[in-house]
Amino acid sequence: MPVRVRDAEVCSAFYPVRADAARAVIAYSGLDVAEVLPGKAVCVLVFVDYRDGDLDAYHEFGMAFLVRPPGQPGSTGLGDLRQAGIFVHWLPVDQRFTLEAGRTLWGFPKELADIELRLASPYKRCILRKDGRLVLDLLVKPGVPVPVGGAMAPLDAYTHRDGRTRRVPWSVRARDAKIRPGGALIRLGNHPIAKELSELGLPKRALFSTTVAHAAMTFGAATTA
Image 1 (cartoon, rainbow, N blue to C red):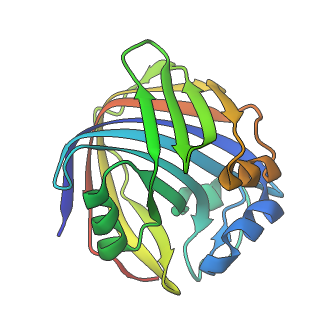
Image 2 (cartoon, helix red, strand yellow):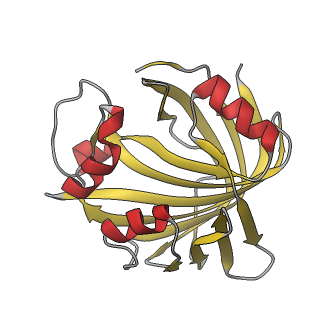
Image 3 (cartoon, rainbow, N blue to C red):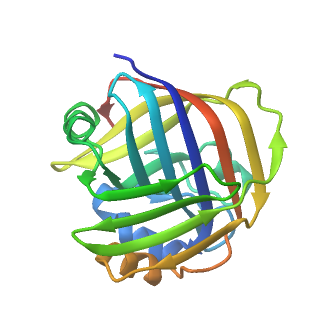
């Protein structure tokens, strides 16, 4: 520790969903969602091309929610958002080594899946299949440049595995980041995760979408949350 990613391309879409529905999805974790608006939580869908890192090269998809840190009193709006962490609910990958490492080191809910990334064109696309069934087809349209130019604020990621919720310190350094209001198109398949997303209200317009052409990340040791 820490485990380092030296270069990755990251595309994400942030969706407003009903807070009560999101709470039901992550109830097993013991965490509560952050409410960015009264009754509204945020579901994050992300796909990543890990090009160079300690866990080798692989593709990954993530379904996550912005959450309040354990013990943090509830509020609504920017105060909740500034202190939010991210709870990783589902994290399919396409390589077995990172699957085993992610589960063992941090408790990430990694599963093997077929993740097809199309990143060479102006639009970024992820086609995700699990057990021969389409989960989703997600297209992200890059927007305007964001002047991040370096390290972003550290963020706590949360995981739950084997009855234990963990906190994972996570930091990101980004280059060539872009953001766009909306900016995502999604088609759901017939997999159970697609049904879960449908019950959250997707497909719908994203709050915003982001792309990072070059990201470097650091993952610290997991601790019990």
